[in-house]
Length: 445
Image (cartoon, rainbow, N blue to C red; front, side, top):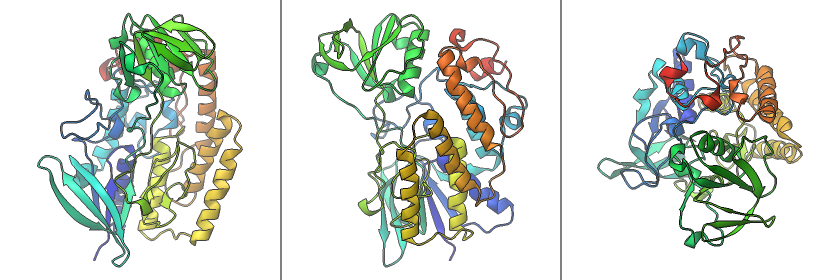
């Protein structure tokens, strides 16, 4: 009997996994039965934009955290598929920082090319994953959301690609209950124009805080105050954006900060990160981790130490995204196909410890970039993922870091070199800070 593989989630990680198996089949390999469960009505995970917040039409938490006017905040040359370039998809070179509609089109373009959709059951949620020691198979309880019916299916392997940017981490501060304005997490942020003319307070100092502050000011916020816990981001912000130490309390609409200063604010946006929420997985198989570059209990960042037939993709904190997901998917595929044999548990545990010890010693963003690039190289050396210039992506990322320091509003106007084709990206026809139209038609004009 042929083995069965369950893939949970049809976002970039899940699509990468399905694509890897189809590529093996295209090269003559016999592949297992593939079944992908996706609770949304369409593919691409977070890139599948929805206006909904809170709960979806079935009463489940909304997965998407995508917002209108989002543009890539890293160069596309650092996430380019080695076997499906931007030039192949669009038929020409495009600028380095595309808006979300362009990236969605690119992600789904590769999936369409290999007819990945045939393996996906949409509007179908995985409610529970357990392992039967006697049968040596996984049992998945899945629900067809349209009618609420549930069933149990057996699989030989499970690969979880649900991501970890959909369950908000929501702190509380004194005075929140009495605040007269709106308080929301970045997960529920959809349109920067909502804050036009308002004084916005952003709690957090990560990529989402950085980008939403810029987006909100760009689309008309009166002022944006960013309050940080440990250290400011320290960019040369445009007029109307400033950073202050951590919020201490609110009295009415007055925000009081750790340095003794205060501001009048109309709305509060919590850019305070996300939790790894895998509560559909039984405890013996469930990954529990903070958002770090190398998680505990996952050998090669993929294989569950207690049962390597349980695999996770994309659960790390990320500089790299699609490229990382691809090489992880290739490695998982080759394990399932019997091309790769994993070492004994003690060796896997020692390897995880070695990576995490190195992680603890990283000093700055440049070392973090090299760390994750080395993780990719460690995976790629054992599989047949198409070659690309990984060292160039390291350089691109480090240049990007410098560009942001030079101009937080202008770094998206830079162009980078493709690690797959060697071509230089053209400049966008309009500076990002002045470009209010994020449509694909305008971007590709």
